[in-house]
Image 1 (cartoon, rainbow, N blue to C red):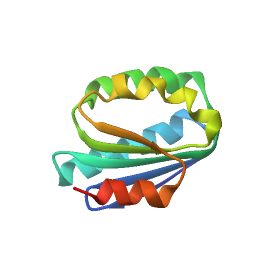
Image 2 (cartoon, rainbow, N blue to C red):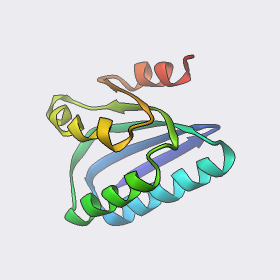
Image 3 (tube, rainbow, N blue to C red):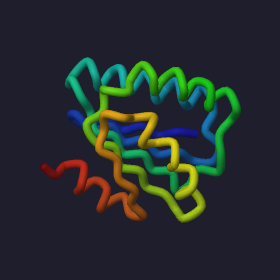
Length: 115
């Protein structure tokens, strides 16, 4: 399950349990909506409650990152220690974005709103 909040040029996505293709499609739609409002957006990904993802999400993610590699200004990823190793793909997937890892959503939000 995914919960998405949109505010100005900041998109917040929180994943609970397993990320499915339907969840990912919802995320894609939110990104497209935000991009209609701003040329580049900031993204907060909260994966602290994520247990995994389906195989079809992995394929869709490859397609998505190719299409949107230059559409993100900053990406803050909030994870527990379990997901730190999973983050290895992010820098290459979003080459144009500044990416940081956080253990706290409040700190991530502060950084996203910063200069």
